[in-house]
Amino acid sequence: MRWLLLLLLLAACRAQGLPEPYATLERGGKEDLRQVALEAQGYAGLLAGWLLIDEEDLPLAERAEYAWRYALFLEEARAFEPGWEAEAAWRVAAPLLEAAEDARAFSAWARLLPKEEAVQALLRLGQGERLWEALFRGRAYEPLLKALPEGERPDLRAQALYRLGRYEEALPHYRAWAEADPRGYLGLGYALWRLGRREEALQAFARYDHPESRLAQGRLLEGMGRVEEALARYLASTPEGLWRATALLERLGRKEEALGVYLRLAQGESPYADDAALRAYLLAGELGNGEARQEAYARLEGGLGLLVGKRPSPPPQALEAPPAPLTPLVEALVRGGKAAWARGEVRYALWRRPKDWPALVPLLYRLGAYREGIRAAWPTALAYPRAYREWVEGYAGKEGLDPDLLFALLHVESRFDPKAVSPTGALGLAQFLRSTWADVARMLGEPPADPFDPQSAIRYAARYLHWLLERCAAFSGVERLACAVTAYNGGIGYTLRGIAREGGLYAFLRFQERDEPREYLAKVLSAYAAYKAIP
Image (cartoon, rainbow, N blue to C red; front, side, top):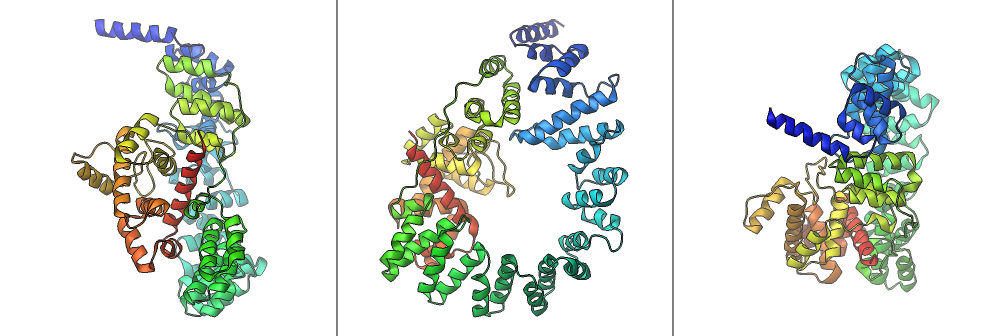
């Protein structure tokens, strides 16, 4: 009993140290919480309402309103933190809104699709186009097929069947869609292609005069060995099609033609523009075309410019801003042991006043919410924090690395989020797979540490990057760095085998079979250049 009294006393003392209305939140009490929920501004009001949603003696409509507001805030704040996921809040809000006969219940349930309880709720609450569109957007394809009356919305029925892998069934509905809208021919072509009916697919694609359709034709023709026809379609299609065309032209030895297409592709805003400019620069040098080489150099933007000695422009500076007015509140909450509430206040302020980001981002960094701060500050210099600086610089120095390279790698891998988990199972600040994490532990001669511990993640990343640079010792300078960075993403075996197969680093960077390592290298080099440019 004495321990219980002591804990209550400590809690009371801590609450006294918190500013209002947070001291009230800490003390609790239904009526006090309700007053905060009804009157307080900012995150405190939202949180107070959320704490009241289970109080059944309060009006149902009031509780539903509290749940809606809090779920909507979580959804739009998009916080990268366990316990801040919007889905859990919508699971509470949706049935409350439906019970209160609130028209927003349909929208709340739609956010929970394709879960069965959400499907059943929408079938209760909606009908017609609104229902069908919601089921389709929510990937509830089987319920959509049952809800659609025969002959209605063949576009939705065809796409739902396609995404369920029922290609043969989809064909008549794609044809019905195409009668009213030629876009249906694109889907019809892909369904026929999936069924192995390639000539029919080509005929369907040809009836939709659009760059995406010409890209599809090119891919299909290339797979059939009809290279010249494929080239013609690619050259009249999308940036991806132009990129595919350059590969074919180079493989055929038609390098002058390829150079022209590279320069054309380098002029755009597509993800292939920087890669095309780099390849044009290298190819123009090989062909002795000085004019084209100068044009390619001028167009070479981003991190890939480092590979040819061109330093990218530094990121633009963020507008100077005075400290945010809520800074004292944030600091008081942190001192009171309520960092999560402090993050809530900053997230709320950013949600309501997004133009105030230059003043709010430093607070997010102060609170460890680097991913959110980087997202808000992108693409300015403020989006490149030197997070965990002591550890990064210390372990980089120990492994003989440039600290800015390690900062860049962690920036791209996780945006400095120590709890990050990728769809492929990569973990933590440095995004290691467990197998690679175990390999690095063996290099260090120790049992595997916790991949979610930021200090361990930085230490392991520095050692692994050092090891990769050793494996890439056949190269020097920035080319060695490019080899190691690509290997960090794609694997050292993949990288060295590809370099050997293609006969050199730059040929591998162009003709590697996977897009992700190619894009990853450009991102890391861009971040590296940004960190080098920022004091």
